Length: 240
Length: 248
Image (cartoon, rainbow over all chains, first blue to last red; front, side, top):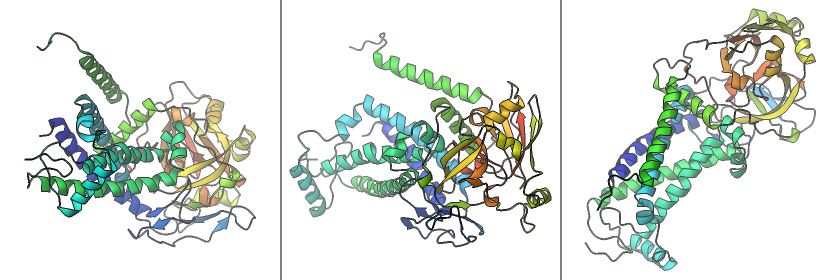
């Protein structure tokens, strides 16, 4: 059985994460173009554009006026169409839920360290960390379908994916989110350096969100399936 | 055997951290706040405001770029308040535009010792700042441009701002109204810009004078300025549906 703190923070965290995804999609719909570097707007090329909202591939712009007399001069143009934009509430709701997630995230992190949940259950031990163990665990997942034990007695793949989410995806999505804030980037300009610019941070933020949604789906499916079976995890030869 | 009576390092740490966090929360809730209109979203915005003011440097400069980084720059919102087809048409703007802004004046009012009218020539004669910065729109796009203008702090000191003043309110020809606090008003990169990319500010981008608040999202950098009012208290323009503080 899990520690009640793990359970409570998981539930509140999941709800605020779902709100973050919902508002994140709304924010992306307002400008469904993603870029690399520091600069990106309707007058510069995008990495790719997502076909969501009426703002997709919109060409309602006045004739471009060059800023300089050179042939490759950057230009200015005025927007003439009625843009889809629900960011007034979308952004505020996004940040409100980010605060909730920061709060429960800190509680989870502190109790995780305090109760040694991370070291005991999540970090792979030196003995189990081997390519052979990994290969066996992977093969097992494909060959036997999946089998589980109840409670924190995790397989190697499971541990690795939890660690990837907790110690890589979550920190990166938080930091790339903060990189997009003008006030935070002023105080911490290194954020713009490590993420290659404000628009790169936005693009990385998007891909982290996609991966976290995929993780959430798999995680929920696995948890539900683990409730239906009591057979041991693959990779560990522990019997029920 | 449990040693119940001993204060362990763990309990001391937990109590300490909780006490500090509670004290900060208490101070945040007690300090004067901009209105939330009974709205949980606006309370969240205020919390972000307090957190950023508490945790971030108030003087740190935003990244400045080189001339070769200047990018294409969309113009959004009002594109010309002097256009009669425009919802926010301003006859005054149309007239001063016709005179190439030679009769345009910025009115500086409120809690200042020397309220007055500043012509474009007067503002241009004051010490100027040129900065190449990134404009971050709430929509998600960014653009780099070079801005030339008077630091707002220069103008406020010139007008003799009273020590009790806490907000600077801005009024535009297209009927926009907004305000910033003194920390952003006195930020070295907060300027009243009359030039863009080495030329006079284009109409689309807010001619003859616009605000640049580089530490906040783009919509705080109001275009087509006509009036500036210094106040001791927050002037409530009503809930626009948008966050007042947008450092994030």
